[in-house]
Amino acid sequence: MALRMWASSTANALRISTANASSSSAVIPPAFSLARCFSTVLEGFKYNSSHEWVKHEGSVAVVGITDHAQDHLGEVVFVDLPESGKPVSKGSSFGAVESVKATSDINSPISGEVIEVNKKLSDSPGLINTSPYEEGWMIKVKPSDPSELGSLMGPKEYTKFCEEEDASH
Amino acid sequence: MTLDPSTNIHFVSQFEYPQNLQIEQQIASSNAFRESGPAEKEALIRKNSIDDALEDKICDIYELYVEISEENSGPHVKVLYEEKYIDKFRENLMFCKFPMAVSRTRNIGLPLISLLRLNGMPILEQLHLEERLLRTTSENWCLINNGTTDPTIVMGVSGKPVELLDTESVLRDEISVIRRYTGGGTVIVDHATIFVTFICNKDAISGLQSYPQPIMCWSSLLYKEVFKGIGDFTLRENDYVLGNRKFGGNAQSITKNRWVHHTSFLWDYEISRMGYLKLPKRAPQYRQARDHLEFICRMKDYIARSDFIDRTISAVGSHFQLRYSEQEFFDRGANVKLSL
Image (cartoon, rainbow over all chains, first blue to last red; front, side, top):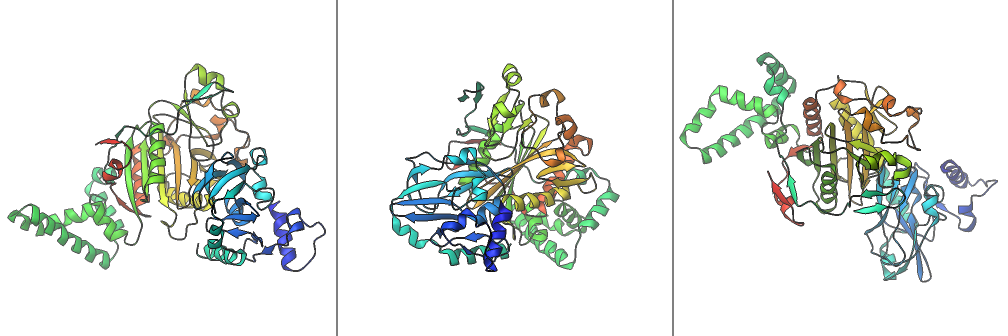
């Protein structure tokens, strides 16, 4: 699956139309990074420095981890998420993913209350790898302070951030 | 205690901090050096001698040592300037008898790490301690626990007993089962298991990204030094192996700004206890469906127990500046009494 995303990103980069457009690009044309992993970075999303994304849709904010994150973590085998009704706080951990013998904290880009949790992830944690921005969404949050979005990175800024992070290591 | 209804196994709670810790804090020692004869000592000293800059540093530190001694001792300190005392100081300096001094000479610029040597701490207490150090301190730590008490099964964060254990025999023999806070698989540990844990800030090690693969690779470099000349050590699909047999289970936990990497090394094991563990659904390719006894090996067949610990401490010392932890870290926060 990762290979297909890579191929699709490369094809887009070279302005070649693909025979089977992946479902993730059907609705939103992706802005993509030509950084060495060809990680996908999407327009309309906001990003934090610990590689989580948030998409604000009216009164609901959807949260997940980025393509860069899932690529560096490896195959996700387990996801630990909070229950609906629990509070989340910007910059603090709200759950964890397990991959390759490691649990990694997931940190919320915004504060608010969890109103929905992606139940598909308990049976199919791999959705985080194959579709980090769509089917791999983790929680939906009712934001308590929408102005927090202002301090997050946009796609171009986040792409640059990833490039710099990868280059310095 | 929480009960897993599908198997009737009681999980011991992960969230109670221990009231009493017995921790033995020791200087990173070099028993091998102290026990070796004069010719070997000479050879070891020569091997560890570097250059004039180091020599100058040693002199500076010796001056400092004398100053401190003068403050504390009195007139007899002038004998310290006799050659034999300088040589003795230099000998000891080279082999971590004065860890702060060593760190100033050999390890200038390396990150600090506090070394905690534990003996027979119950594994649940060790895991509690690790989580506490991970989440409530900002220092780098290296824990070495030389064996635990009772045989205990330790599963990864997502482990399901019914899939991973022969629950009937586990319940019959009343073996404790713990679910730890890191990922990875299932191990059974006892007095013959040696635990080594690193708890580090994410930017402690220059050039290391705090993701699972890079951390694993870094750890394998450290252990490669430990096993140099001892056995055919490699990192194979996230396992430490000698030849093609696993002798150490690894796991990690990564938070926003810190990470933990811990290993349980099979110094020795009892064949019958491996029977509590089923063949896992998820297994590395190199395992090739071998059962436990064909897949793992004993470290004791390769290296003496104290040698392994000494060599590990030495390897840690080449990546970090070693130091003692301070008692205040244990007194602040939760009610933890420390007896030394």
